[in-house]
Length: 263
Image (tube, rainbow, N blue to C red):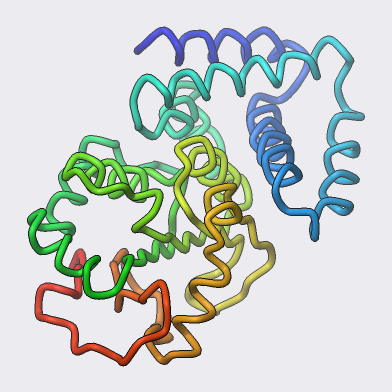
């Protein structure tokens, strides 16, 4: 266990004598997600600010001041290396066994899977040159390990995922969605994180990462959809579906290598 994870655990444990650890962790994730969202998403700021104030009412001033310290440790930890840090902390606190039986895929396995999905550098570059960027959809994102592994694999191939990858990530559990949103935001992954059900297509909340907002991705995706370059596909697996162009152009037949799927 690295030093950042140990520091995060100590901070949570310092408040654990008075609060249920699961609720404490979930509240931290929601507060951090709310803070990041309120900096870039003015359309939802009023309601989310009210939610932030509602949560902090349950903590003393000294306890509230510990939450930014946890977020600082998470930020520094992800700067040291892209990984599923919050997912690891969730397991370190033994919350996966004690409550809902939630187990997140180890990051090393995600890295192996991402390498299989992405393929060669030449294949990926050819797709990006044809369409401008690729999109990925994760229907049960958990803390976001698979998406982080995908972005890191693309980066190691010498391609800037902050410009050439857009992610839609869904999870039915709000806490998991908040974890993913925090990590995607800090790693500057352009993404929309949806709290909803991929099977029933229910969507309760949308969280837009700073990279999504600052990169103008809403407009890019809308233009691609209007040009008929984005197909509406049922979310059934982690995939990089039909890539979309950054500006309208004639539809291009996707080569066989273009559909990067896990199964």
